[in-house]
Image (cartoon, rainbow, N blue to C red; front, top):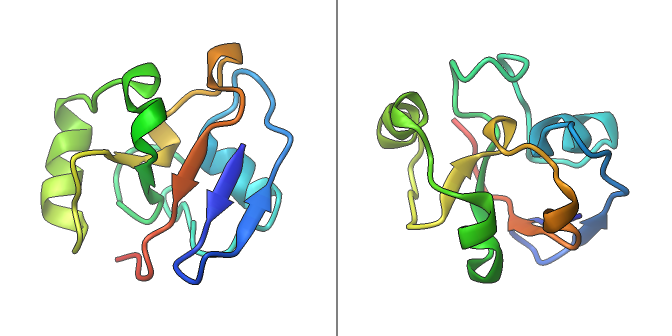
Length: 104
């Protein structure tokens, strides 16, 4: 899995199947993904932009996630997701997400 920050720095992480994209970032010290609520979908401090080529594999946000994205992020995009709501699967090998410059 690859995280790309606002300056274009890449952080490659060996992701464990079953973990969330947010948990893998926090465990590996990826800057910019805070995960303040611990993955409980009650904040938006783990907002990422999923790269277009992975958007279909990752899927769409649920209703609660939609509400948090609408209210909690300053630069929502069509592929915006809360990384705590994306479970790592074998199909997501190579997943690349961009980290917004500012989290709420």
